[in-house]
Image (tube, rainbow, N blue to C red):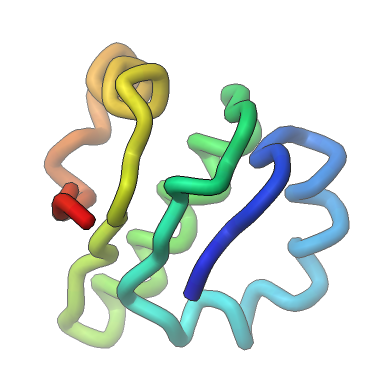
Amino acid sequence: MTLTGNLDAAQVSLWWPERSELFRQNLIDVSAVNKIDSAGVAFLVKWAQACQLDNQRLSIQGASPELVQLISLYGVSALFDLVSP
């Protein structure tokens, strides 16, 4: 699944009602994401936790240096597999 645009509080609020469908995916491409904020990171954490319930891991492809830094700063790096495109 490819995410585009911004991964911020406004977008998360639009996706939240559809989260059960979204969270079935365990590989996401974020290379087309322009901006990410703490709400976006929290959304990815919830997604990763949903994957763990199915004994899977959330793989993130195309993570920007900003995203890598944010998940490191928040101490949640272990929840994700970062993969190169």
